[in-house]
Length: 164
Ligand SMILES: [Zn+2]
Image (cartoon, rainbow, N blue to C red; front, side, top):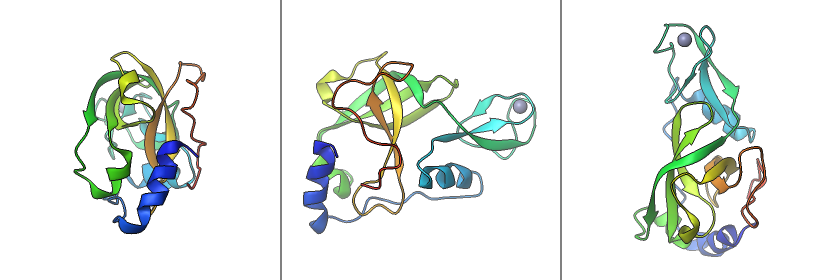
C-alpha cells in the first residue's frame, strides 16, 4: 500500500466515493478487464491497429474490434499538476499529477501519475497499474514511473488488481 492509499483510506470515512465511469457498449470490455485487474484496449481484428477511445468498428478499415491486453507502457506526452480539490474524493491525494501518455500501442491515454509531482517531465517512461480507490466501485488506470521493459522507479509500485 502506498502513502497515497494510506492517506486516502484515513480520509475516506468523510469523503464521497470517487465518480463512477459511465459504461456503455463500446467501453464495457475495457471495464470488464479492469475488474479482473487487467489493462485492455480496443483493437481491430482486421488491420490489428489499436483504437482509443474504443469503437464498435475500426476507424481505419471498418473491421470488427475486440479488447486485448495491452502493454501499458508509454512516455509522458504532457501533464498537469492538480492542486485544487475539484473532485472531493481525490482531496487526500493533492497535489497529484494527471498525465497524457503516448502508449507503445500508438494511442494516447490520460491517468493519474503515482509519486511526487516534482518528478514528472515530458518523455518520462511510465507503466499502467490498476488501482481501486477507497469507496470506488471498480479499479481504474493509474500510471507508475518506470522504464519500458518493466523496471520501475523505487516506491512507485501498486500491485495489479490490488483491491486497495
Ligand atoms: Zn482496422
